[in-house]
Image 1 (tube, rainbow, N blue to C red):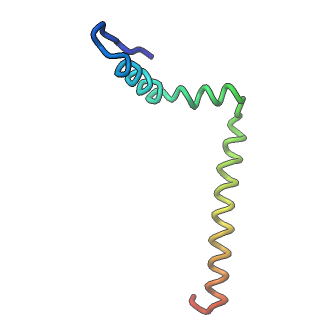
Image 2: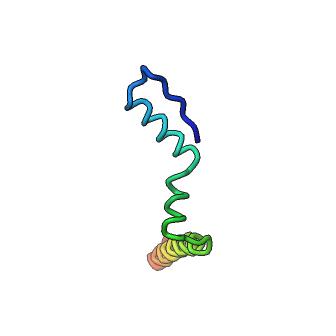
Length: 71
């Protein structure tokens, strides 16, 4: 990660460039992953948990519609 800063450049602009570079290289997420030791299996588990929740909601909505006689 490198940002070129000139002498006459305002500090706000330099910090903005640095922040943009860190986001481009995904450094905040990497830092959080290393800080809390989030394992890939935990991320996969969270994804599957959210997907299962959506699936349950869709099935419940379909059952309610069938009960009303719409489908």
